[in-house]
Amino acid sequence: MSSPIRRRRDGRYVIRLDPNARTVLADLARQLPEAIASRDPMVRRLFPPAYPTHELAGAERDYRELVDTALVNHHTQALDVLVATAQAETLSEAEFHSWLDAIGSLRLVIGTRLDVHEDMEAPDPVDPLAAEYGLFVFLGELQYLMVEVLADDLPDEGRPDGGL
Image 1: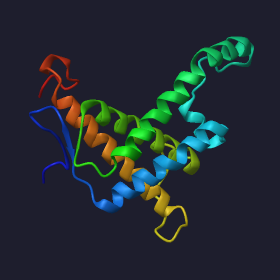
Image 2 (image 1 turned 90 degrees about the horizontal axis):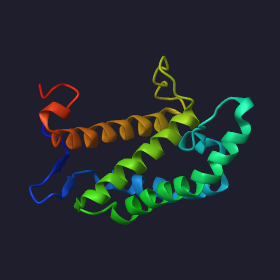
Image 3 (image 1 turned 90 degrees about the vertical axis):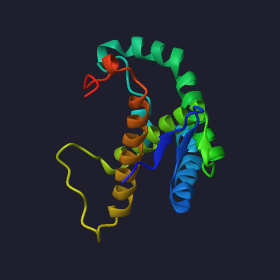
Image 4 (image 1 turned 45 degrees about the vertical axis):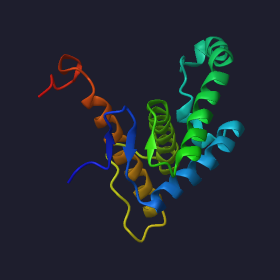
């Protein structure tokens, strides 16, 4: 089976997704900027600390003053591009990278909400969290496929597998 994501010769990217999946992505991307602006606790992984120890609280505060606005703008812009292009048949390179950033952000937030960790098992299908966990898995798979397409463009010596 071929990947639903590929790069065309003209440099544009094709993403073949079910229309419902596109609608869900756009809806999620519309919701996240409000959570970012309000600093909802579920977005904390989008703003990781540079200085996690209490002794460096002043350095962390200075760091936040320098980068917070840029981080908010970066996340918001990527989410806006996803919303604007959710139904597009092809994406430019910049739009593709924005999708990748937005999907990564959505996945981090959902993973935080679900408290995902390495030894976590998938919830039982009747568990109220099962649908959200399924969305988390879908975003991870989509992110993986997008990275694979980007990796195909790397020269063999730059690939982690050495071009094997």
